[in-house]
Image (cartoon, rainbow, N blue to C red; front, side, top):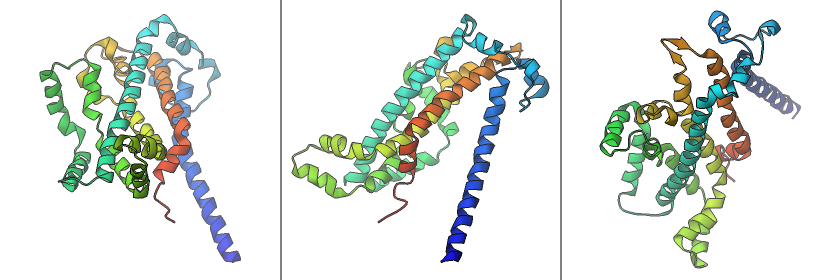
Length: 282
């Protein structure tokens, strides 16, 4: 018994050290970026990102520029990314949950074949699809609109797959009890199944939120107007053959991390619960 307790303590210590190393590996670049926001952009070109605290080179000019009128375009890009991310996450979760519920709760012809197509879509790189999609939005007169950015990804294959697996673990007796009580199929989904799916919604909200917030390639193809750019595209325009605005790029990149951190902290509890659902069975 004592030997087992010692072995358990060693495993816990090893796990703690492993996760501390992973956390350190993640935090060091963020710390270097944070220090860079207090330095001139030319210092990054000369010395690169580093962890040195050079007080004589540090200042608040970059923050002053970010919150002054000269950085007005940056906040337009920030707003565009926020609106697109919120809209994409909300609509994608709703549509994907409805599709996944159909796969998990009902029997219909060619159900398994249709789900195989979902799995196939998951395995296709976006680079193969982007040119046909680009041609399609041009033919539909949707180019340079936020609709073109949103529509192709509203029914997300990996989100459908995750929701379908989660719903499959919910006892069918819950749906049957709802039908016995006279609830409609929509009522069963939104009043009984929907609340149970909160952990899975939190997990997929973080995943889809990160994907939408960091999405660069497709918005770059779909959008043309400077005032409609998302934040990744806007930050990319600060680097040109004629000059690089590293001062705004560094501090702007640091502020671009904040919404994702807030999103994860807000849903952290449900995220862990959702990702580990089904790992332990009674």
